[in-house]
Length: 208
Image (tube, rainbow, N blue to C red; front, side, top):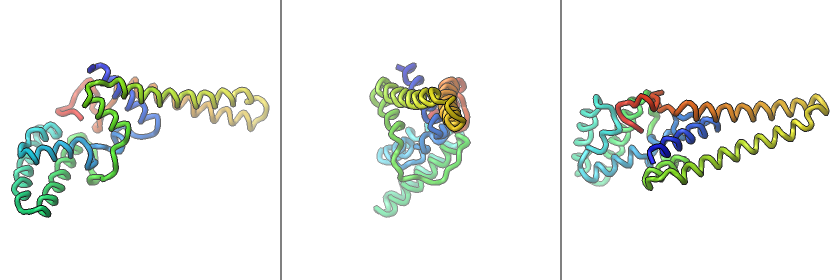
């Protein structure tokens, strides 16, 4: 199962790279969203009153700051609904900011936008313990992308010598097709990198 998860993430990285979505954004940086895994972990931790589960999202050197802010948040939550909401929000922002800093990535505030469908699918795969549906979803999308560009350039090639204009149409389609395939291959061959450029072969202090 672990091998399938790793392969599926390489496919996602390749897919987002091909579409022009930087992998470092993690499809709009879903750890920056209110429905992302970092904030969801923080919500559950606050309800339980135990910071332990939150600490995996930050580096060891940042643990004390998070623990201190966690305790302050718990105390503030007792002051009423409005205070609870403000304290929770501040803790979420602090946690995500420190998490992102640990990856060498910027933090521009928490987003309310929904998590990208492909990332939702990746999270569901982890929850279910199987990457099969995720791999199928991603490979089908990439297969469709290759076929679409291939058919376009194949058709253009048949008329490429009819005129200079037709020749240029072929060249344009050819360039789009080959660049798509090249970026796709590069994304998979690279093995995937995280926000801060840490490669899978050399894990950082925490994983995302």
